[in-house]
Image (cartoon, rainbow, N blue to C red; front, side):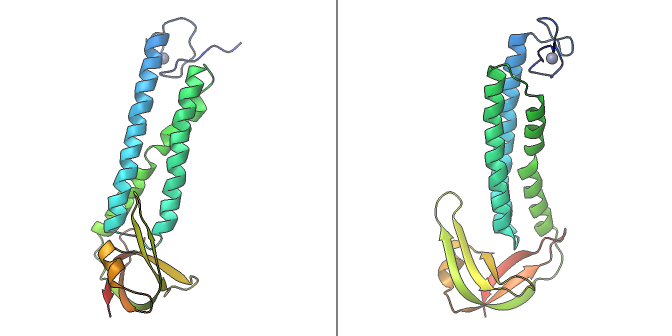
Length: 197
Ligand SMILES: [Zn+2]
């Protein structure tokens, strides 16, 4: 027979008081919920920190990163809900807890990476002249504005360039624009700005 585990520290408990952390069943559950809530908040703050980092130093592959962050976002919130439910039903949670804890720092790491990659980048901006072939905007929380331009990179057809709302309004399909690209300190190419040719 397996013993129930302490919700706080995960040790098997044979008695009311956990031998590893000294908490009672009720205290351990309270501690577990408090920790779950604070880790979820830390995660949400990280997701919010990613947005300004990706706005000031937008990587060329921003949309792929946003999709990745989106998947991580819903997986993490789903796991938090699952952990809560399983704890309530006294089911095994140690494995899920580990996955959840592994996901919490992900948006912080990505935000930090983009920030360092752009902020400390001393490479000179490389100007490339391209034609705007499309525009894309998505209102709402993320307020996405993209200029779709013909790609200058081998192997890709288009680039979706992150621009401010002003630049989005300033440029039209058919315009020839100069995109200034930087290599990035850690090798993530990013867009310094878009200018009129
Ligand atoms: Zn314990």
